[in-house]
Image (cartoon, rainbow, N blue to C red; front, side, top):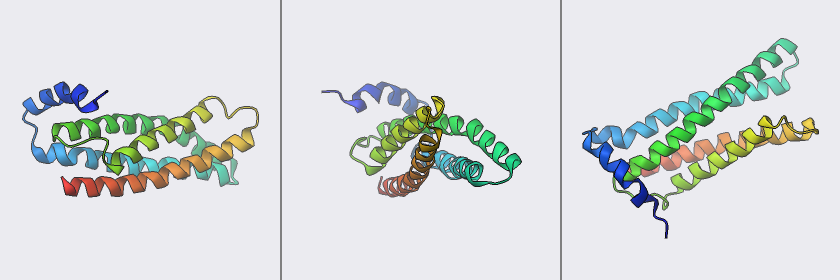
Length: 159
């Protein structure tokens, strides 16, 4: 059977050999991801919805451009943060897949990936329906980010 911890242990061993302080190993991922989730996530969501509901064409155009520019960066940082979080658990010799934090993070990346695919393929021919799905899927992802942060704080305090 595939054991993710065993696969990542060699990388974790190398990072452990660097002498990174325990507080950084434990709280570095949450600190960086809090910035991504709450600063970038909220701005990306706000810009997307503002571009959708604004009546001023200039505001709509600017908001949608901001959304298109920052959303891929947010996804990239979340994917890298996910990797760092999993590695942090391995470094701390904690189980990976037993935490709701792991499962909300995994679900969140899948949700964002589906949403990115909808946008990447130009919303299809029926732009109204797919744009609406994209907007509500993104809002669901933002809500899941908050739940994910709560589970992460609970996990961090339990370790």
